[in-house]
Length: 395
Image (cartoon, rainbow, N blue to C red; front, side, top):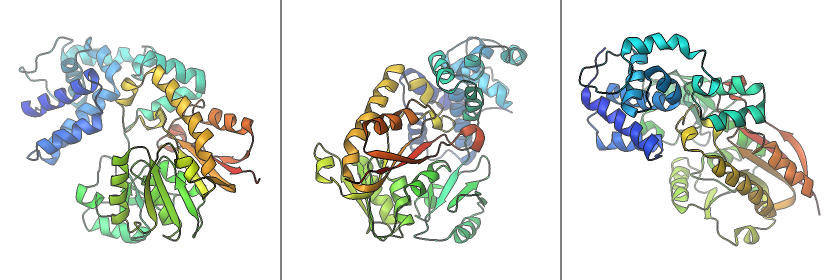
C-alpha cells in the first residue's frame, strides 16, 4: 500500500503537537479535520489510526525503529499497518526490514517498553494492583469500541437500533445494560446522528454509574462534577424527567454544552446547570436526595480511547488529584440530606483514587458503605471505572 504525502505529513504534525507540546490528541485531531473538510473518510481514518496507534505504542515503536523522533515513530507504525515507506519520508532510524526483524525481539523487552508506558506509571501499577496489573495494562492497550447509550426520553432501544440501521449502521445490544448499544469494531457514529439526541456516546462502564445512584422520580439529584453532563442526562432519563437534576461544575463552558445536550435530549425541563462557586455547598446544604461525585481523577481507566494521556500525566499531578478527591468528599457531601444516597465515582483503576478515598470518608464517620462496583477493563472489555454507594447517616 502507498501513502499520500499530505496525509502522512498531517499525521506526523499532530503526533508532534501531542508529544512535544502535550496537546490533547482528540482535540488536535478534531481541529485538523475541521480545517480540512475535503479529506474523505479513508483519509481521516488513515490519519486517526496513525496518531492513535503512535500514541498508544510510542515506546514499542521507538524500540523497533531505534529512534524517538516522531517522523521515525510514524514510519514504524506505517510498517506495522502494512504500508510501503516512500522515498520522500525522511527519518533517522531502522529500515522497514530491520523494524520487522526487531518485532520478534520486542517480546523480550521490559514490560514498560513492551506495553509502551512510562516507567513510573508501570511501577505504580505494580505497587497498586500487583499481579492484576499485567492483564489490566494489556486490556487498556486494546482499541476502544464505540458504545452508545439510548436516551429513553426520546426512544426505546429497539427503535434506536432500527433508526441507526436506516443509515446502514449496525448496533448491537450490550448484555446486562438495558440502554447500551455497541457498534461494530472500527465503526463510528456520524456527527449528524451524534447531535440528534436519541443517543449519547458513552462507554459501557460509564453507563453503570448513574443506575448505582438509584434516583427515583420526584427526587432532587445533584451531579456535583457534571462536566458536559453525560451522567446528568442519564440520571434525568432514569427519573423519567420527573424531578430535578442539578448538573454542577466549576467550568461554565462545559455547562453551556450540558444545556445544549439537555435540550436535544428533551431533558431541559429536568436538568438545571449550576456553576459551582465558593458558597455552592452551603447554598445547597441538605438539598439532595441523591448525590453523585464523579471526581476528577487520573483517567487511567480510559487509556484505550485516550492513549496520549499516559504521556501527559505526571506523579505530581496524580498527587494533586488525590487531594482534590478528598476535598470534594469533605465539602460536597454537605449538599446531601441525612439518609440520602452518595455515589463516589472515578474513571481510574487505582485503589489510591478509589477505595482509599472512600475509606478516608468512612473513617471520619457519618456515612455507611452500601456497595462498591469496580469495572475492570480486563474482565469487562470496557473502560475502567470505580463507584461506591454510601448512605449518609441520619442526624
